Amino acid sequence: MSTALDDLMESVDSPLIVVTTSAEGERAGCLVGFHSQASIDPEQYCFWLSKANHTYRVALRADHFAVHFPTTADRELARYFGSRSGSDTDKFAGLDFTVTEDGMPLLADLPNRLLVERVAMLDDGGDHICTTARVSSVEVADGFTPLRPSQLGDLTPGHGNEERAIRP
Image (cartoon, rainbow, N blue to C red; front, top):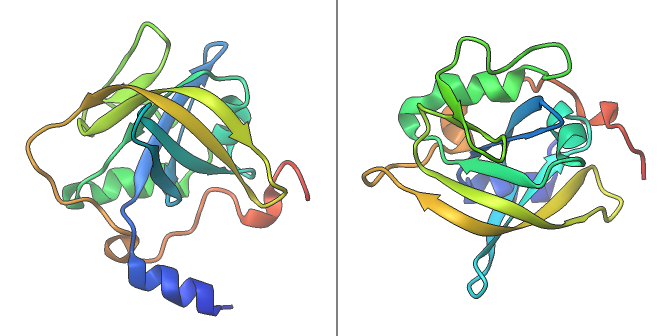
């Protein structure tokens, strides 16, 4: 069911990101639509993770994250991270990635990224949790055109919103 908010957000068509992390040897990553720069000084970035996602459960135990910015050429990789669940799939199997000394998986095909360290997580009772993170490193390839939801088409997520781990 479409709402006025859905219609407005479709018009805004904010870029998508892929967030990756790990905790206690468990890797995770997901496609994220809710994110923004949150502070200029210090440099901070926020992203919201669905409580239904495997990445959310790993993120609760993680301190470091990579925020990758897919381009219009990365539709299939974005679709891959958005339509599969890490609960039953190793999303990194067969992908080209490296691991930082902090354990974060960095996707070789998505070189435009922020490396961040968690400052806080806010659970305001909604279906997503906000992670505020301090930017520790920025990696940018040449200029790029970000991938937007309208360019991805219909996507069935790996978990539906009703599957969230925590209910308000």
